[in-house]
Image (tube, rainbow, N blue to C red; front, side, top):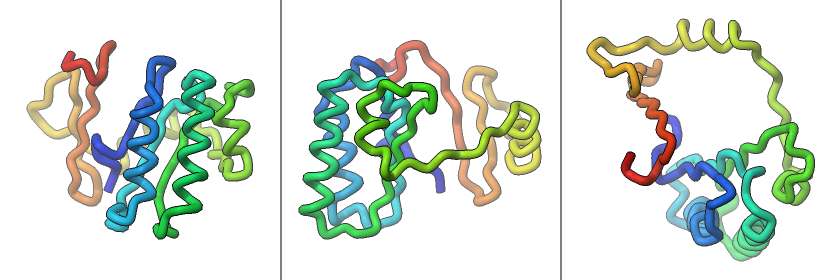
Length: 145
């Protein structure tokens, strides 16, 4: 299944150290053995101080954690060459192949279908594994708007 809301942190320059540390703790704590996938999206947008603390908390918790098979994905823009996060986690980097718009649309049409009666802002799709997914776009996500 796809990650749920408590497993994803969408990073901005305003993301605070505490938010990043909390996600890292969730990913590396002994209670995370239930196969959850934790994600930092746009981690290249973190300010230097928060990026540095992300690295510190990650490596400190990896060395002190009993969880060996954690699932943590850090997504960064490949063009953000001056990002501290990209430099700090470079040894773990995996580059994904480029897919053009048509390939992505073809995949979505094949694997996902729009449920009837959904609002245009929040489109709901039925995934092959019977999990419902909702996409909600907001200018101020996390602010209740």
